[in-house]
Image (cartoon, rainbow, N blue to C red; front, side):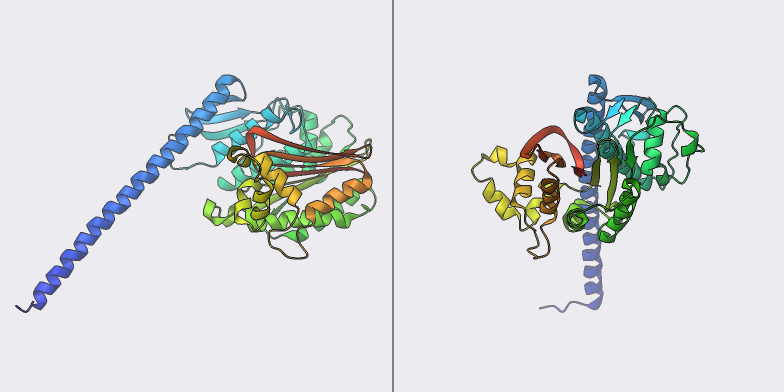
Amino acid sequence: MKKISKKQITRDIRRNLAHRRVKNKKKRKYKKQIRKIKEDYHCKNINKWIEKQDKSGNISIAFENHRKIIIYLPEEMNFSDKYDSTILHIVAIRKLVVQNKKNHKVYKLASVNFDSLKKISTSAALVLTAELSKWDDRIKHRLHPVVDKWDKNIFAQLFDLGYFDLFTKKPNLHRDTINSDSSSLKLVKYIKGKCGDVKETRKLRERIQIIIGNEVQKWTFLRSGLDEAITNVSHHAYPSSYGFSGKDKYWYLTGSYDELKKELKIVFYDQGIGIPKALPTSTIWEKVYYKLSFLSIVEQKKDKQLLKAAVEVGRTSTNETDRGKGLQDLLEFIRQRRQGYLSILSLKGLFKFSMGEKRENIKSKGFKEGIPGTLIIWNVKL
């Protein structure tokens, strides 16, 4: 056998390396093309969805500079009798905010117009604030609210909620300059916390005591539920496999007290993947699946069934003895007061436990359009 010279070996190595570079370059080019096709398809779907909602009159929009969109909020926003309209505007904001900045084919959000808004619930106000906060974070805090034509009561309500604390460029108007109609509803300034910030619930307690004027009896039950909600968000709401980074992992919390009705409301919201999607990755999934085993495959996939089963199973996904009682504690507080409700909206599902006149009622419902995350609303009469 002829001995291969060093020169030939060097030539062969160089040829192989060049071949690998060409092959790897083709692979990268192919992957880039596939990624671009997926992005274009995603952007096309967003554009179609926006155009469909605008054409049907579900949301009111205007175009600014070709592909930049202004969203006009409706007169009233809440998650009870105005759910469909409210959620469509929230989802529209999210779709236009969470997209590829480099792709010029997709519509982009230019502004959100509040001029027509006359009434908004505490929960809707918190979700709207959270979504606009997400947008402001993505564009490096360049948002500037224009409030000249706002309804005076909306301005006062959002001012009390702490909405304007979001912006580095705040409006010149102050709360004292707005002569809003006298309202019995007192709001707690919202808290924006990172995953794991369980101690932030202390701020909520202090602020609630200020607006109520005294100590909240049985606060331990409420704190337990909120602490677990924050812990669950940290463990399950923002998995890295879904592309979440550290700057996305926030939760939002606020409260309100109606002096006339003597009703205390606590609202918690995260912008994660939602309880139904998080269930299969937790050990609680086995029990939930068993609970749904009598249903058809189609029914099992419905968010409302997954959410209802998850709440009713009522145990932790970590199997720790000091966890898993949060929701049960919130329900127990309502039972002791004998009047109130607990609503959990996650993706397209709703679970609601309510109590009035010593009777308990459980409601489970599915929606055509879902909330982008998980919203917990807890209301009780003091």
